[in-house]
Amino acid sequence: MPILLKFQKDYADEFDVYGFEVITEEKWEQYKQVFKHTEYPQEYYFGTNEFVEFENEKDVLDNVVVIEITESQAELLRQLFGKTHSKRIDFGFVPFSYMDERLPDAVYEQIFGKDEDDK
Image (cartoon, rainbow, N blue to C red; front, side, top):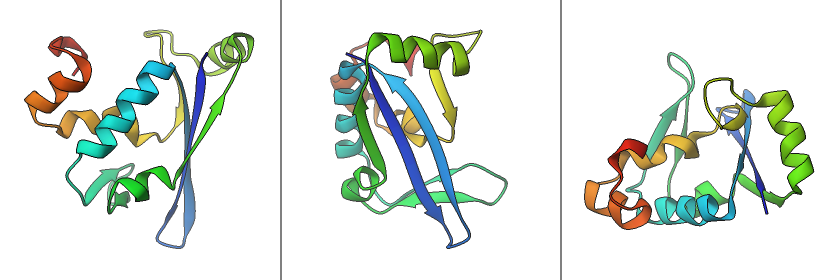
């Protein structure tokens, strides 16, 4: 069953940063392992000088809402927000999709396998 992963975090008490991604249950399990093995604090930039910072794994999870959706709902989101150059369905700022880039290679391989093309 697809998962709608919604992200929302306050930026410097000025505005909220939003985003969402449609992922598989397997990808959600991988993301949770990434959150667990990330060295904190971490900053993820979405502008020239704007970034969100995560102090720990709990801080990441506190800013995520996980919603199981149907295949037809995922298909509608794909039609509205899907990428023409990939199978990704996302919109806005979703730092989780590149948190794995900062993992040591051994940890990355433990979570995702040895296929370096995904990194």
